[in-house]
Image 1 (cartoon, helix red, strand yellow):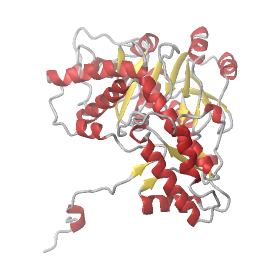
Image 2 (image 1 turned 180 degrees about the vertical axis):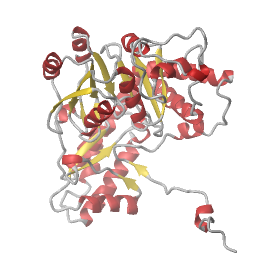
Image 3 (image 1 turned 90 degrees about the vertical axis):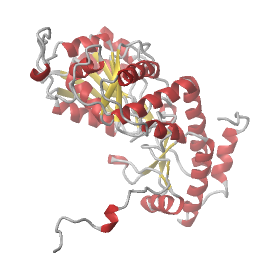
Image 4 (image 1 turned 60 degrees about the vertical axis):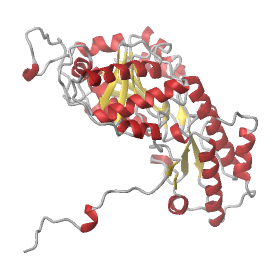
Amino acid sequence: MSNSYSVADHLLQPFSPPPRLLMGPGPITVDPRVLRAMSAQLVGQYDPTMTQCMNDTMALYRGVFQTQNEWTLLVDGTSRAGIEAVLVSLLEPGEKVLVPVFGRFGHLLCEIAERCGAEVHKIETAWGEVFSPEQIEQAIIKVKPKVLAIVQGDTSTTMLQPLEDLGEICQRHNVLMYSDATASIGGNPFKSDEWQLDAVSVGLQKCLCGPSGSAPITLSDRAVDTIRRRKHVEAGIRAQHHVDGAGQRIASNYFDLAMIMDYWGDERLNHHTEATTMLYGARECARILMQEGIDNAIARHQLHGDAMAQGIAGLNLKLFGDQTHKMTNVVGVYIPDAVQGESVRHSMLEDFGIEIGTSFGPLHGKIWRIGTMGYNARKDAVLQTLSALEAVLRQHGHHMTPNGGVDAAMIRYKNQPSSS
């Protein structure tokens, strides 16, 4: 008698992914040290070694975020989990948020804020450009939002929005400033305290050289005060000394930062079972960055990003967007008119094992996005990608100087230390 619930024989084999060099806009090839850290055995969530690991991770990410904020911790989930946790915890229904949109992920901030019940106001600029501080301040004066929510680096356009002046502007106008820096932190300057930012969330899968699945965040005292005014403790774990806040209860249980802070704080008030393996990985990502040194990591991303961009130009390809405001770690490339962009990507993947990215929205089918970030911000990965891309483009009829991409990149590498 056959079992109707049996599965095919191939499903009983372990999954074995093919070797890939991930040179798109993320995720990236994970640093082997992070993979090793994530292979460690679990301990109980209140084991002293576990809580010490949590405390150590908080301390390491204060260095990553360049902050003294006490509440610097992890939200279990992808970078989008961090975004949602910040917005749903800061914004009560009906409150105003201003979102400057210069790519896909600005629209994502609007989407999440709308789901929080906020009154969303957005200003937009062309994809490939960024905003001036004056444009944003004028919008703040007009809208009078509670929160300014902005992406620092948007991989959909490869642009890096300057943040240096925005925190001070927000302070003057009594606005909370939140930035999603998932795509940029670790490879571009980011200074939470110096720039007077109130909330920041990121992910691991870009310049931090890890896998997607953990969202480090940091919160200023102003942000913490706002969140704690909405604090409510679950009935099943509530004790007599717990006092609820006066504000409206945060709409999400899982992303309630007031409760998550209680979990990461001294009381260790149970909220969820920590994603221990991701904690190990997130700790290792921060450790690797701090061991290298943030300035050194930024310089490394700048070097290899420049080499990739110059190599792309050497292949007779045109770069996308305002190059004065481009992230160090990803470059946009116009697809030549006579070339089928998806066919090139397919050949790069299937013939050479290298992934490069497509794009979204108004740029879909118009540009490729090629990343040099995290573990892949290194010379051999850049040269291997340029060599493969030249071979594929030649097969697709694109005209260029032979070896032009690698030669142009090597000019950038000339006189650089061999360890770069």
